Image (cartoon, rainbow, N blue to C red; front, side, top):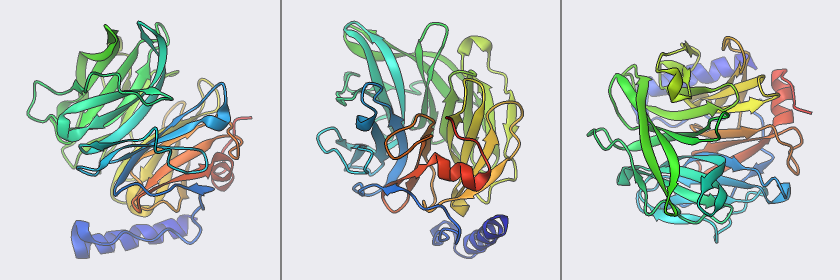
Length: 349
């Protein structure tokens, strides 16, 4: 496996040096994992998925995926068979990038699961109730309002265990060397979800950009990909301060480190998966302790820069489901058991 990946690394670097960013992406490795399901195509430009678990009826769980087309994009909803559910999908939005899910936002009418995405060209994040995908944000929550670097891209939701407060941690297309991310407390105001800025934090290398963000609710950490530099780690709870806790993955990616997702074996153990976009593979690190590289797994998804994973068993995906975007306009569903077998990892029983 490592020889195959090394070959892809070299091929991609050679193509990039000859043709720049317009060079064609490398093909999947010969031993790349095959998806169990490939979704129907979106209009143009897949970017990021999120998994919503229907706890009452796992068969009706949903995959939320974004299309960042400038006019026809939006948020697409898929079933576990990869079919687009047109009645729930929301399109006609202005360059939607990342999306994330949280459970149990407190509202005047009760508790609501939510999907939250960034709408880059409107300088806003958008909030939808689940599973009905109704807009509940009054047209959008403006972000980065005090800066000219105000085009949101990445987003991850943090649910604080102590009080179940839900926060949106948002990254942008470009930003300063310090304070690249902003964190907003999401709350109900007369039936509309609003956001209260609680902090700016996060270092930036200046090498490319920061898009992918992931939160580990139980351990209380937020991770984000400082592309071409590494993965940075901070506390997710704003009350614990803005000190950087670690940087990992340096020089372990062929070009860009991108999509991040967390597979949970227990409340404190599991794995962190980070896309190596240029090699069509994912680097896997331990969730607990120091994040030292455990394995590299080649996949069939092309230049994936967004992913999500769950350890909840779903129909056809015993032991968990991993979803990766692919630049061919699809999302690919993988069985965690097959990833674990290839990489020598564990499966939640």
